[in-house]
Amino acid sequence: MDQVTFRSDTVLSDVHLLLPNACHLMKRLNSVGQPVFTSKFRILRDCDGKESSSESPVRESTDASNVPLDEDGDLDVVRRPRCSSSNRDAVCPIILSQSAATLTDEEEDSEEEDGARDVIRIEHTMATPLEDVGKQIWRGAFLLADFILAQASMFTGATVLELGAGTGLASIVMAMVAKTVYCTDVGDDLLSMCQRNVTLNKQHFEPQESEIRVRQLDWMADDLCTDADLDFCWTDAEIGDLHDNTTFVIAADVCYDDDLTDALFKTLYRLASNMRHPITTYISIEKRLNFTLRHMDVSCEAYDHFHHCLVQLQQMTDGKMSFMVEPVKSSFPQFFQYERVEQLELWKVTAERL
Ligand SMILES: C[S@@+](CC[C@H](N)C(=O)[O-])C[C@H]1O[C@@H](n2cnc3c(N)ncnc32)[C@H](O)[C@@H]1O
Image (cartoon, rainbow, N blue to C red; front, top):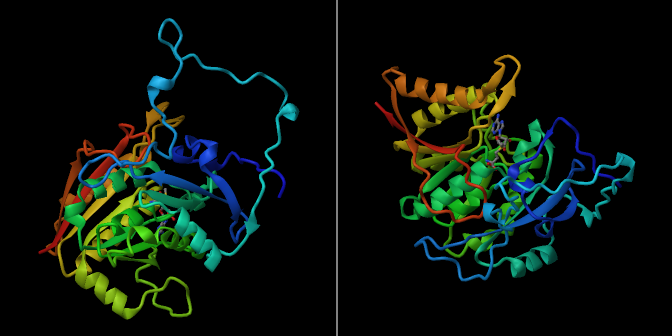
């Protein structure tokens, strides 16, 4: 591969869009030929709110005060000189290796040496088609991660299930405080990348004997996969542990397609009705505004559908389960550097068996 092409039907997360080049290095091609990058994210403060002692954040500041303004206060945008596309420099990445998603012993050792206590390293791809969005990191994962660290005592020692975990960032942060995290998503390729991130960051949770189990959980399927011939399948003991001990479910940026959102809510209902304890779920979402010809206006259809599902869940009277829904104020401190835009929201859903 000698040229990277960004196709028009691909999407790129703002997290990667704003990440300065110095912070990510193309490491290899994954098993389906997509370039894999590593990004480092520094935890800016400890759970007591004290700022981390490290000199500067790994992420470059996106502080608005750095943006040049003209004398009227308008943005002074420096435009790229107009030139024909043939004059543009071709992007010729150097690929370090093409490898399966397992770490060699040597790689693991050097990753560990590099793995400072306050830095989370995540491997991810960029500009994926919609079906591969889980291979990027989304701002909703940072909002959720901030909330977890801000409310660390609430999650301490808990068993937690993450749905649609993608690269695994929120699960890794959760394992810094919780005891067991079932980190779930779909697709061997994505789950392998997630497992690799878990291994890369084990210094954050292994010392306190917490664990992350990366498992397949497809919202479109009725049951958890227990076929031992398949990777990331569940054992009966794990399913027992999940049902007996889970008290929290978390999900970041998982509502962007109405059919998937419907399947996610059905999964939430089914899981909650199988759990021994009442379950509290935290879901982060980014309200994405789009102009549509159908509305001839700006709308946020995926968010509206998510909201509709929340209302339906709360109004449900099936005599078996009761759900309560409330927004969570996002005034908690920021532990990671990212743009906490006002469109980022966190919702709390509590479920109880009647
Ligand atoms: C926008 S990504 C968010 C990833 C990650 N939570 C984050 O915020 O960085 C949506 C996630 O939902 C997952 N997903 C989509 N359909 C799913 C399904 N049927 N079952 C389980 N997960 C699914 C995707 O694989 C992807 O990881």
